[in-house]
Length: 71
Image 1 (cartoon, rainbow, N blue to C red):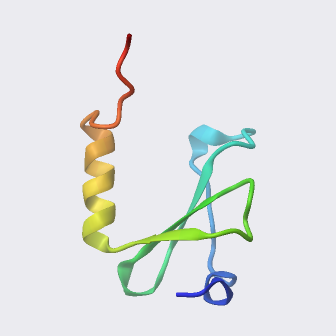
Image 2: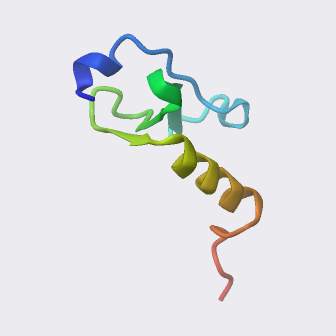
């Protein structure tokens, strides 16, 4: 998928990031794929996840797999 194809999609941020300039935006794409981009650079590159990849990522987030270790 090229950037021109992403320009017409509806990007959104989490309600937890209200007022923050530093967050990611997500878009629901065709064929159940998910787009993710940097909100500070909306014309820059976007990552595209398959349904399985997105499900694994969000499950990992919910299970604390990406929690930063404490020193």
